[in-house]
Length: 605
Image 1 (tube, helix red, strand yellow):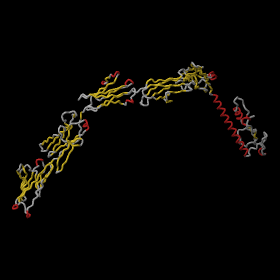
Image 2 (cartoon, one colour):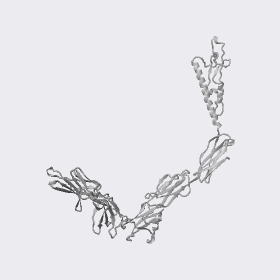
Image 3 (tube, one colour):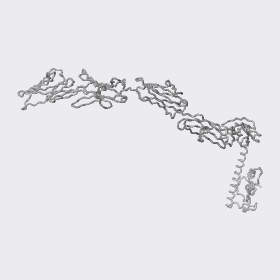
Image 4 (cartoon, one colour):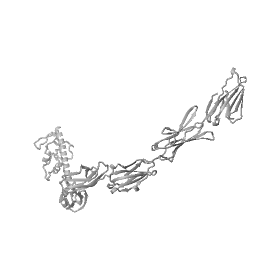
């Protein structure tokens, strides 16, 4: 028989009974029993094929196999005892062996609870850190403690680890262990855990708990006061935070002060959040600069710490623009603009025009050959490169004075009789000019920068068409005027008709000449150069009618082709003269013509 059999609670234990009888003899009986308080309590009596089970607490959970091994089902921790197998062999006597039944229950993960109230480094007693509990295990396990992975050992006046073992009604054990130890400020980040150790089949096993952190209270040793954003970047109009930090836990009470004249300190605590250590300063200005102090008070030991910081509020002030010469300037003059400002940091200067476009850099701007068009508002932009966003601007008006200059006028203007038209006159000047017309009508003025535009609505009559209109612009420095010419729209139409008539006439003559030339080349028309000739026909054709064809349109065309002065030019000068003698056409050749045959001329004399 094995000396020890291990089985987990709730499982089935099997205990073998191995024996040997000399001479291959057989047993006469086998008894299974267990030891209870030094007494044997029989469970089974086996003789031959008969198995007799005794009435015990095990009834219903026992069985004997063919090999006479004892099986115990639904094992409990109370079954952990010694079992005896006794074999009787007649004349060979009796023998027995014993087996220890060990019942175990693996403990679950231990439960750890940290001290929720926190511990102080100034505590005179050893403070409790955490408690660890292991439940429902058998036999009772052992518990150890660890800090940051290293095992802690009991140490007098420094570390205590008391434990309690409780046996539940189920026979299982609950083991509880508590860790007491002094802490330092470095333990604010320490992690603690406990480990449960138990034995199983001769080997040691462990189960670890989760890691826990304990709140550690300690007084402040250092205080830090800083400006956010950085003091070097603070500018007028910013919102600034003064943040005071102390390395104590819990945070101490914060107070804020600002140094005034004669080393007096102004209490600003009412403006601060004393719990978080933040002093908010809104819309700071030049007067907000100075020395600020944060003071801490630890309520445990009433210890005070303090820290100072200098707040520098960067600013730009006194931006001034000077124009030389300062007297009013005329067109063609030159001026110099100078810009100056004051600031505790280095400054850059830029010049921009009225549209915001950068025109120059540096604190001076030179403008030469000024005109009305270059008159404008210029701005000097002062920038602090080391402090982003710190800038100021100052505007100056450069006004060029002079008599008006008319820059646009609606002339010449083609109109019709009795038509309502708009006459436009646009001028530029400073001081602002006034616009007058020499004709009656409805005038509307529009002003844009230094430009003045006047629209005059009038009805065209004979006098206006003949004389035109006069636009007169004036101010204190002079007068300018221009004439608007009105032209009748019929004139361009007549010219167009003449041009079209000339083109048509030229085309008609060109076509007629081409036809005559074609007939001549074919031999149809024998022509001479010596004026009018008779056209000889064969005798058989003497009775045929000879027709003289004249172009009636030529005289009309000649009338259209006039010079620019209206005089008529001879038609011969316009298209040339051509005399052709031709035979009479055959019947039906020229229908509708007269019966008399005449010569055909290219133009009337």
